[in-house]
Length: 253
Length: 309
View 1 (cartoon, each protein chain N blue to C red):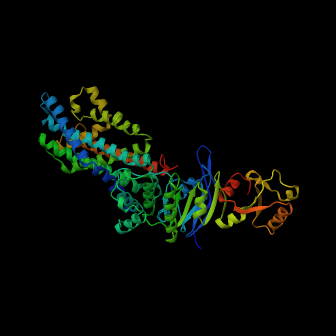
View 2: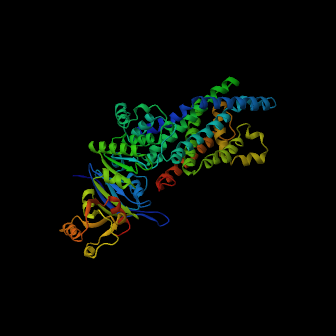
């Protein structure tokens, strides 16, 4: 393993994050605060509690997932797309690094950034509502796995994309609706029976449900299903990346 | 001399059937400067990209320092540095971090003294804290060289290093290349500028339509292929070449004031003495005599147009 290369890629990517630290830090704080003001206050005044948890506290795991998933995809896709766009990818391709090292560097950095933002949101939310974390290890595992798996997805998008529009296509047209319809702001049990069944086809439901369980012990679907879903998703992403690197698809002519 | 880079029957075909490299074989000696000349689309960049690992070859093999570029890619690539044709740099990063990144990528720890040495050599030391976007085009090209040198390669590829740069910077580049050669680095450069090859190369390779037409020592090439011309300036202009001189295949230049005679430097007899005698016999008065050797450019044009091979 070329650990120096992994460290170099990781450090180079993190430098991008630290250059805009205020933005990286303030943006999630502001958006979380807005969610609490708009959703927490407006809707929270009508829905006092969901299954024994105050509405404000109920939406915290979903809010963290919303930001973390979007940021992981955006960071990882930009991370690898930018060298393609600038032409600096020549250096990666001509360096003594293999694709596993490239993925660890880029995906590791994107996952770290989104993990950092997830923690910032958690701390911010703590100022608005009382949060309890019943299963801290499970919470950490879900958070880290989500950061990693969606960074892998972002990496795939970055390799696939041939322009900047395509980079925002998947997060905006696919992921955002799935997250909003995946129980971020409500419990699945609040939906009519037909919609409850349809919702179960949304993979994000399993993610948010599992993550919320680690906070309050509340889950829409069994926790093992959630764990299997996130592991399967990570496996699929790794499989696709493996194929990309084996064939050199969209990277090496 | 030891062969540091060995290319054997290298071929590259694309999905649309285009053959960018049609079986290129080439051995490069350690410490030499080889200039690859060729028109646009000749396959120069494809050859470099394939050796450096950016493009996968269709068939053939390449070894760098005895290491196969595919099966022992780590050892092979560590020996090679690449300065690409296009300026491709992360605009928001500083010069220092950009160069340090390259060193890390090639498996070396951050060695501040070494990076400082490279930056100083390339007159980038004062700019080390500047972000790339603040630099001029010439400075950016220097950063590309600094990045390529960050891992102390023994073989350096320069893909059209002076394309679009001003004369002063071009001369600077030649000096840098000369210094690198002094330090024992083997250099392969592609260029459109024949004068560049003429000025700095030890050997010249001519590539066209994916084939290597020839590789030869620059001086030998010029001596072998070069034709020399002698220009006899006349005091009084003439309108026609006198019949007594017709055997010499002369051309009339300079409004009838110059007779141009082309001869082969390698021939046993150049025919100059006879020519000058015949000119005197014809009653022409000489005001001056000049000789001119055909440049690499003329040789190149002849080769590519298929006239001289």
